Length: 453
Image 1 (cartoon, helix red, strand yellow):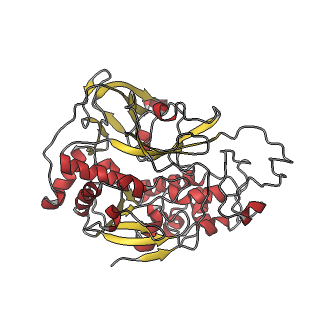
Image 2: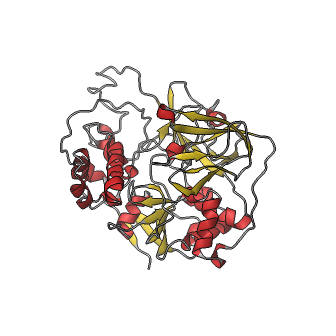
Image 3: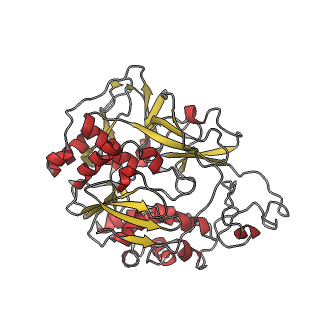
């Protein structure tokens, strides 16, 4: 039975720079990269040597501690370089793209007609499993567990987020194939959450083999963690898998055609980007063809993902595995005179969640915000601001304090199993103490994984 929820808490940060609803085919990048850092806790074991040729869909590396979880090449090319950091940690596996596209081909199959074990085997062997993430821990799903449910959010409510109704339109068949495959992985339900305020695409509304829920409210209404909390909360010992709707299409397309399709639509957004549209590119593509000639100025921050949770990668960086958005913002490292643009300025061009500036009287105004923190880390004090933007029935301040002092019992009692770093992005934004709260949540989850799971 479907459910409906209306959130009372949250915060919409309205930025200038939404992508126009126009789809453009971007030229094939010359270089792509698979970044192990996109998969928290992964220790990759590379099986292709530098200089060797690799086909699209061919395994490049696997998880050292779970050999069944494999990662495949998104293109045909030559393994150009394995970029390493401190202690020889692998940061990127770069592949130079070839002009001729060769792909690993398997027999297409209807996932509805095969067993759970066969669906899992197909997804694991062909690089589809990393699309699945699990709660708790917010990392690649463990194939050894059976989730009590699977959650898919059909919309993203983060700043300048891509419109999945627009992206998925016309791919109904592949989306349904993906849902059929996912339904095999759980003994519970596949939950598809729609935005109650909008008019969702037919691919979502007419989806079968799922439970359709609806949610409305400010960000983080579109976060899958918010939806899990309100529709089917997680208790200790339970697992829930999550997956992005565009990745559901990729999974469905593989079962329908028998080959790995790494193409995806990426929204170019942000006040400092020109030609803001939806570009069809390749998973892990270098961003140079996307942003070259599309920047308003040079002093910008290019982010793979959204402004709250994305990673700064630079104009020559690579698209994150789970990202369908590139955001370009002013860097914000210029000096601001305190009487005009600084802390004593009138603030007619500033956004604040605390009603510090007169702009709160114009709730629909959009802003050109930069990345300046406007302060530095200071004492962690109780303000009550986090509770206003976190639509969870938990105490965010107390949970973060429990993580800081490494109190495992308190972490469990305060709901650590339900949350992920992205759920606390708004808490980090409104935090007057300038604490890196998403980082603290990740540290807490790591402790829980080591000590309790």
